[in-house]
Image (cartoon, rainbow, N blue to C red; front, top):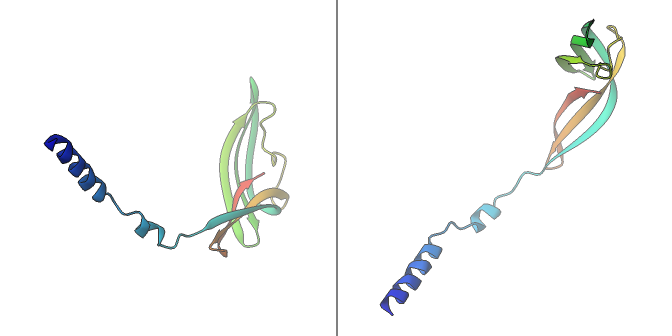
Amino acid sequence: MKKILCLILICIFLVGCSNDVSDKSSEPQEEITYTHEDVDATITYIDMRKWFAICPRWQWEISVEYDGLTYEEDGSASGAMNGPSFADSQEGDSVRVRLTNKYVNGELADRFISEIR
């Protein structure tokens, strides 16, 4: 009987020592949301190289600008269907990009170009 009583008291003590989660829920949480839109940006720099070795291959460096925002990318691809959308573009041409807006608690916190489409 004493062992059972001790076991119950130990369980009550351990439950009482747990962290109180109600303090964490009373802190205001930031609500972060994102919106995306596709826009036309202008190519400000492009270095595109293409060659054929068993299959078509591309290597590029590109910089685009939209509404004061700049995005730079360098990459490569291989395969007949994997060429970049801007493979035949030149400086001054338009290219489709994904513009991302970050909102914190409903207010615009950041705006950036996330990728070339």
